[in-house]
Length: 527
Image (cartoon, rainbow, N blue to C red):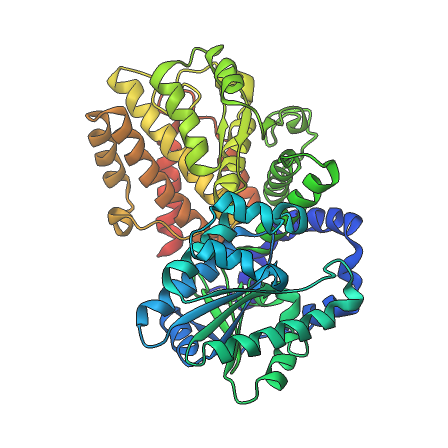
C-alpha cells in the first residue's frame, strides 16, 4: 500500500503543474490576494480533524441555526451545492429555511420580493439587481439557487452593501451582513438560515466572529468548499474520494471541485472582463491541460522524432473554438464528409458535455468549462497526437468522431479494441488531471480479464453502433480506472504510461494486443 505522502504526490502531480501557470496569470491580473484580509482566510484552515461522509454532513447541519456557506463566485458548483443543501434540509420537514446572499445588495430587497411574488420574471430580476454590471459571474447557477430557495423556503434576503471593490471597507460589510442576519432571525425565529457569502469572509475572525457577537447563543456552522490546503492534505487519504472533512466542531469543508477547476474558472472570468466582451477565451485553459498532462507523462513537446516521444507536439496543438456558431462548425465538419444525423449527434455532445474534441479536424469545441469533460478531451487529443495526427486521421480504424467506421467482422473487432484503448487512455488522463472524478460503476469490473473482454467484443460486433460504442466506453473507462489505481499504488511510472499513449493501434490486431497486455499488467499489479 502506498504511503500517505506518495498517494498525495501521485494524485496531485499533474494538477499542481497546471495550477502553477494559472496562478501566475491570476496574480498578474489580480493583486488582491496579497491583502491582509485574504491572507487571514488562506492561513485559517491548515488541517482537519477527521473525514466526513454524506450522512455525517447532514447530522452536523441538522443541529445548526445559521449555516454559513463559503462561495467561490467563479465556480458554479459552489452555488449549486448551496442549492442542494437547502433542498436537503427542507425535506426533513422539522424546520423552515430561509436564504441570505451576498450577491444582492440589501437595498434591492424589494426587487427580490417582487420576484418571489412572481410579479417580475427572471430577466427583469437580473437586470434590476444589476447582476451583470455589479456582480459579473455566471447567472444560471445563482438563479438555480434562488429558485431552490423559493421552492423550498420562506424567504430570500440580500445581505451586502457597498463598496464591494474596497478591501479596506470589507470589515464594515461583515458587520452589515451580521446585522441583517439578526433582523432575519427576528422575522423567522424558528427557521434555519442559510447564508451564501464569499469564502474569504468565513475566516473565524471575520463574519463568523461578528455574527456570534451579534447573535449570542445561536448555533453557527461554517461550510467551506474546496479549500486548497485541506484538499491537498486529503489527497493523501487512502480512500478513493474524500467527500468532506471536519475542521473543528463548527467548521467543515466539502470537496466538489479541484483547485485547478476553481482557478481556471476564475481565470476565464478575468480574461473575459479584461477583454470587455461576452465570451471567455477557452484556448489557454485547454492548452494548459494538455501541457500539464504531457509534462506528467514526461513528454518532450519539442522532440524532432516520433518514437519514444511524439514528433513536435507543439505543432499539433488543436484549434479551440469557444464561441463558434454551430453553422461554422457544421461547415468545418461537412468538409470532412460528416453530415446528417452523425453531424447532429456530434454537435449535441458539445451541448451535453460542455466540450468535445473532434480528431478529424483536430479541434476542440467548448461552450462551458466542465473540468471532467475538458480533462478527458485533452487526454483524447494527446493520445491522437502521440500516434501522429495526420497519419491517424487518414486511417481506417475510427472515422474521426468516436464511432466505428468499418463493416467487416475483423475490422469491427479491431475497431472495438481500438475504442476500448482510446476510452481507457482518455479516462486515465482525466483522473490524473481531475482526481475527484468518480470511478465508473460497471458490472464486469470484478472480472476484468482477457476472456471477458473478448466476449464483450463479440457482443458489441452484433449490435448497432450506439450499443457498440456504449460497450467499448464501459470497458475503456473500467480499464482506465484500474490503470489509475495501479499508478496510485506506485506499480507503474509515468514513463511507462507514456508508452501506452504512444502505442500505435492502426495495424490489424495491434489494439487487441495492447488491450491484452494492459489487462495482464493490471491483473499482475493487483494480485
